[in-house]
Image 1 (cartoon, one colour):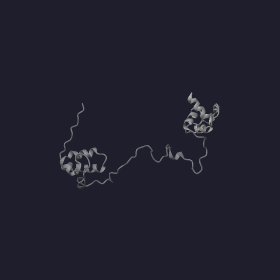
Image 2 (cartoon, rainbow, N blue to C red):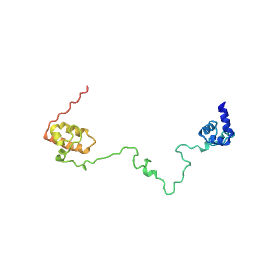
Image 3 (cartoon, rainbow, N blue to C red):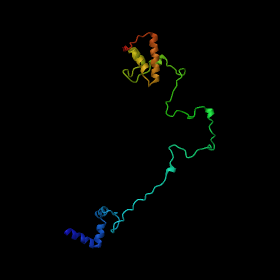
Image 4 (cartoon, one colour):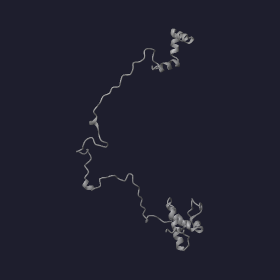
Length: 185
């Protein structure tokens, strides 16, 4: 009962009522009732009106995907019509294949093979013989030179130098141990 009397005292005094209405608690209470926090006290707002519904015929506006709006009978100004007889059956006039691979051709006549001295002085930057030259590797294990020439694809210059050394080993008649191939039954 004491709470009700205290609330009634606040409501009767205009100064205390204004001070109470400006507190966050009063704003939260007004918001919970459905009124905006800044709205003055008074009757609740009117209920929202029902939405306006109507039916419109939009079938004339339908356009197929990637369709044209109208048929063009006259080409654009500044662009002569394409003579398809001139190009034959080839209607795709793109400059390149947009998603195709890039083909590179190497002219063997333009590739300069290194000399044997250049090839033997090439330092390896990977593998078991990291830091040694190809000449040192050829003296220790000539089969590694064959492996480089047949397997490595990332360094074309290294492969060419390994092939020069391999051809020199063949010319000198150096025996190289090859792996035994597995016989398929």
